Image 1 (cartoon, helix red, strand yellow):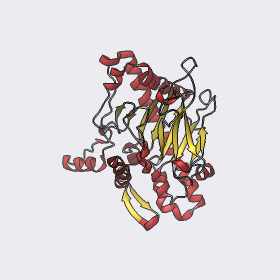
Image 2 (cartoon, rainbow, N blue to C red):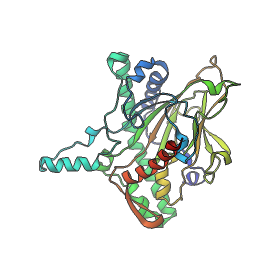
Image 3 (cartoon, one colour):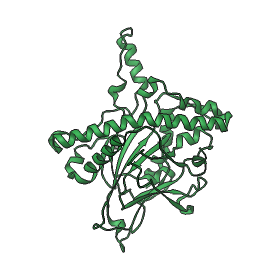
Image 4 (tube, one colour):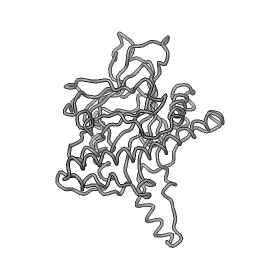
Length: 343
């Protein structure tokens, strides 16, 4: 909790996460984002690429999340999350009308079908390995993220008992809340490009602009690819990119050899619910000087953005305001959308 208070970031191990599940997920992500042909990736395009499927390079802009203007981000992304069918459970004692009303109450824009590459585009072996590896990692990591969040909330309450009402529900996960969560796993792929080339207009400009994360917490795992580096602002008090000093965020070199190590950072929702006791910290991804002859150039990252059940009631300490998670999230996204519309 102390690291999260001062840095907004912490390293976590001892989660019980399977090493092989992590390794297979990173391999699968690298195969899809870096080794597959572009038509394979584009077969996973969706109408709502900010929530599902493939998002090509230079199509998203994270600077808007903190009200800034900037160039689009140089990273490929692929997203999976909870499918609508996961919440379409029935009860023999309920009428079809009441079931429909219940389903509608828990569905949100974050509950929708995933877009997996199929056998026709990528072949049976690769497409099956990818789907099974990513789905297994997603399901396992959602459970582990619940436990991490529970521990964080217990720490907040121990230090600030007046925040118990606001954060206690975050750490209480019944089976219904787990089934209807809105956590999204994003695969990110970085490679050598124009911002690595000395003399180019964008030389060494960030690959992903400084931003904070919208959700509750984010749990990260990444390989040792040399072309990019995650950086955080030196202090949670730094809220503007131009005024920030930057510190590299790295994992131990042997993080997957025994007990997997994950990076955890505070999201905007937890920051709001804790009244700023834990702050979401500015972070970005920057290009690192390297060349194609080096080993392990491309970088692959798995980022789980933890989200709550849409109708979960949140009590914001400031003003004692009650809103649902869906309402809070829409307000947060609207602020970023307003910035993009001004560009």
